Image 1: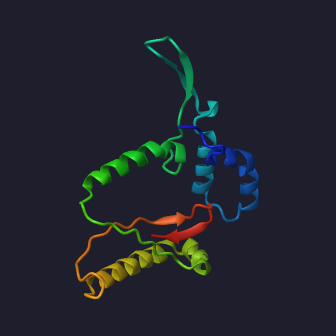
Image 2 (image 1 turned 60 degrees about the horizontal axis):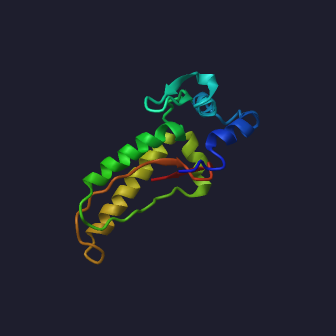
Length: 162
């Protein structure tokens, strides 16, 4: 597999300090720590170790991971293992992916009232799924579902959805 032209760490390394300066009033200390961890992940800043191939003797330096749960490099293996485990649990039936999104105009409200807004999002989406699925005009069944909270979109803008 080839490396993508840019990784999140590259973007943070290039523009992270300017971003932190510009949005310092809006960033929490844990968010700043995540940015710093991702920028340092698998670089000499975290130290490393020498790998040696027992067959051919080739040596390579491997830098240590930050192990932050938000780091895309560190979590790719964990994500892949989790997905493989979940795929083993799937029943041989059709599945549907449904996304419930808070309107963009209310995203600021979620930042200031996370527990209340995210709780409302989960309860409203669950009630909607159960009600629509139970309706004989649609499915007429009791369903099971898995909800996952995402607070950011692919464009790295706040976009609460489940």
